[in-house]
Image (spheres, rainbow, N blue to C red):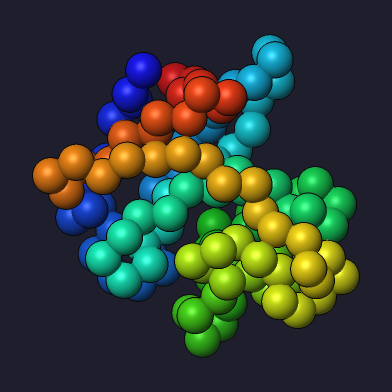
Length: 118
Ligand code: FES
């Protein structure tokens, strides 16, 4: 099943994000899609350190310089392309990826484990 999340035009610049929720085993999780150059990458918005939302209440998913995904709780820093934590308390762990598909500039959630929750 494909769920429409948005279009690449909704991600106008590097690091722009679309946020949404997914459900697995009757539990809700925040998720996001972020632009990495011409590609969209999807992850759960759950930090591998303590399971908190990366952006807390700030809304911003990126580090100050805009080049890394950043957890505002304790400073974990993740590569946008791979989700790997390269600095911080969960260094070496990764964000959980969500399968997405780009089709003619449209972005769809196509994950078999995490289902879109409206
Ligand atoms: S919860 Fe993200 S660094 Fe601690």
